[in-house]
Length: 208
Image 1 (spheres, rainbow, N blue to C red):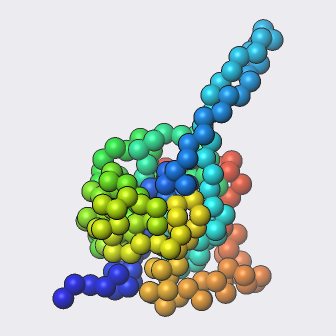
Image 2 (spheres, rainbow, N blue to C red):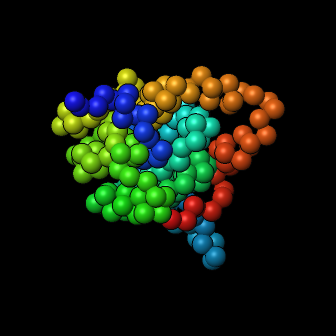
């Protein structure tokens, strides 16, 4: 008998996300920024910008309160992704990964978990290699149809608009601890919250 998405979610210990189209809406902004040289002349440097959802950030905190670890695996390399990863204190950060099972295998070895204990949230065909093997495959609402067809769960919201939070809440609800995690998040006496909550965007990247 095939497992339901809820049954799969109850096993999850690690949640991994793609970035573009999942934690963002998929837009990539390339902006010109003036830079002054030592001699006083002005040159232009191109900087990449993306938009992220604050709801997803709060979801990361809820997941940690639920005892899970989180990370991102993306093909692109971007300083804005590195900054967001620092801000969220993500345990696993892999950029420049065209074949995403490689970092998944590294995470499994490091953490001593199985594929059944890993959830992956994706939106495009590059994510299928992981989604076909992991314990819980999640597609965001704006995912390609080929990806939705192979997902165990499709989020109600689009990437960059709370899809990451949807995935997290689905897992916590399946485990029966979502309400508990929410209450812990707003508990002023919870002294551990400061250790797991989001940072200020200026810390070193986690080492893998």
